[in-house]
Structures are given as structure tokens and as C-alpha cells.
Amino acid sequence: MRDVSHKVSTLRTAVAKAILRVSPSTISQIKNNTLPKGNPLDVAKVAAIQAAKNTSQIIPYCHPMPVEYVGVNFQLDEDLIEILVTVKAVYKTGVEMEALTAASVAALTIYDMAKMVDELMQIESVTLVSKTGGKSDYSIAPELQSIRRAAILVLSDRVSAGQAEDRSGKYIAQQLEERDFDIAELTVLSDDQSVIAPAVKRICDELKVNLLITTGGTGLSPRDSTPEALRDLIERDLPGISEAIRNYGQERNSYSMLSRGVAGTRGNTIIVSLPGSLGAAQDGITVLFPAINHAFKMIEGGDHKVQNSEKKS
Image (cartoon, rainbow, N blue to C red; front, side, top):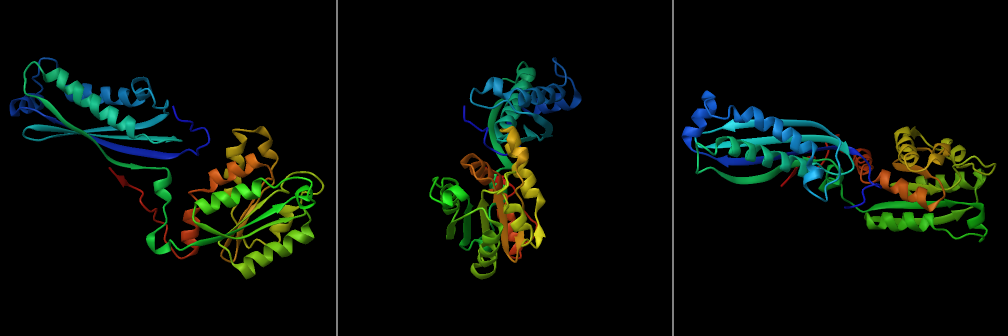
């Protein structure tokens, strides 16, 4: 079973389709409600809903899923029944297995209830029609896929004095490079507002990077002055970013509520301040990507439409 504890919950949807080939006479009996076992569509709908909610008990590696919606529709043609199942959940992993399992069980239920009158029935296919949620919803439009530039400021008295090793800044740089960012600068500074402010201004106004991430100086110690330095420079606040990072961290470490990190834009640069620990840097990157890609698209003139919001099977 894969570890998804680090992932961010998003709205996940999946649509699956099953095709059951039957005799024309069976279609007629279903429409006239004359099958010996009763109306199979009503029973199959309930069976599909139950299957979606209990997929993790059937498929060993599926996670228990807080299923929030299951829609089941049937289309009867001359000699086939099309079953279309839609499943929704706000969770950390997709619901395609729930949709596929529900469609399969619906087809099997109809098969069971009609087999005594139709020995030629056949489940022809069970396929994933579409899915949304997760990384595919935040891909960057082809016309906006230029190389992006980023800078990292490590704000720590101990690291700048050579008394501690920088782990957070290096981690952030590595993660950004893996996401196709060109690292314009990785600088270590003391946690001093008079030093931080001109560095941030220079990076935004002269280097004009797309993203500036600071790490450190967001706590409550007398020397933690990063939020104060950034607030004077930020032109437009992005409070949702800081709220999301704190909320994600709070579910894993109760001390996250004490972070005073801020986020916003200066010119076309998005500024995000993270706490100084490696764990906080890891949490911050997890929350930021891939959703922040949409912000870059908007700054560069894109619209609000999500790219690849429906991934075909």
C-alpha cells in the first residue's frame, strides 16, 4: 500500500463505463419489469454505490476512501446495456478504482439477475472514461511552458555564521530544479530585517525571477523578522498560500500554528516564506506544487481554465 500521507487532498472525480451485451428479449423484459428476479437496474444501482464505498475491502492495495458521491446511469439499446458510474471524493488519491469497481459490480448484478433468461449475456468491457484531480489538473499550457527562474534565500544567523549546515535551501533548490526551474540564486543571509529587505527587493526588481522562496525567520524568537521584512515589500498579498501551508503542517505537527510565514507578489515575482526546518521546507513544496503553476499562468496572462482537467483513459 503506497504512502499518501504527504499528499494534499483535492476534489477527485472519475467516470467509468461498463458494457453488457444482452439479447433483445432481455432488454424488453427489463423495460417491462418482467424478469423473475425483479428490476435489475434498481438493484444494480444500489450494488454500484455499495461497491464504490467498499472498494478498499475488495482491491487490496486501494486506500479506504471517503466517497462523497456516486452517480449511476443506465442506457438501454437494442442488445446492450451501457452503465456509466461517476464517483467523487475529496482525498489524497484518485477514485478511478472506485468508479471501475462500481461499474463492474453493476454489470455483474444485472448479469446475475438476468442469467436465467439469457445464456448469451457477456460483459464486453469496463473502461475508465475520464478522471480529474491531482497533478494533471495543474499542468501548464504549452504556450506558457517557458523556463522559469527562481531564487532561494536561507535566513538564519547560525547558518550564515557557519555554525549550522543549510539543508532547507538546498532541498528547495533541488525540488525546483526537478520542476524545470532555473535557479538564479541561492543565498544565505543572517536573520536581520535590514539585510533581508534589500536582498528581496534586488531579486524581485532586478533579477525578476518568477518565484522567490525564503526559508527561516518565521517563528517567535526575537531575531525572527522575515514576515516584517516581506510585508513592507509585498504589493499583493496571497494569504491562501500561507494558510494552506500552515493547515497542511498542522495536521502533522501541532507547532505549525506558530509559523508566521507570509506570501504575496512583488511585480511578477511570487514570494513565499517558509519556516527554516527541513521538514517545513518539504511540507511547503508539497503544498505549493503543482497548484502554484496556475498562479504563474495567470501572471503571464493566462485565463482561469484548468489545463487537462479531464484526463481521458
